[in-house]
Length: 162
Image (cartoon, rainbow, N blue to C red; front, side, top):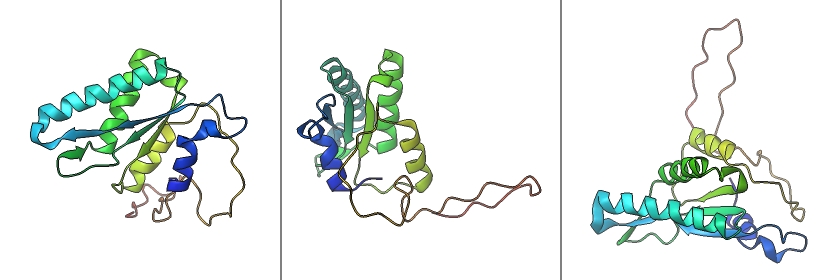
């Protein structure tokens, strides 16, 4: 998980020296509440189309965002729009050309966060200016406790709540 400052760096990545090979496109993931389920379906189609168009235009990072949701425009569930774009790009054979970043106001369960970050690696890892170190790992949300793996002598370790 990244904070707003780190997200801003990704969105404006080509403003940094030596990062001109990267291009970020932000794709809104909202649907009209009044249109109901049909509006959600059309919005997902539009998000997938925008992802394809962005890659064709040279994007290397896609930020899938539910920012600016309001009473008329509801956020598409983040796992739904992320998986829809991911599998669409696999079908189009363009998934390896782009990194996916999910910006959402909804707090996800820790297992969801771990699976999303594990399936969306960037094409390469840019080096950012140094910052103070964190106590938690950058890939593990601070509020998440990942259960240990079961040892061969025990049959099962109970899962801990996140």
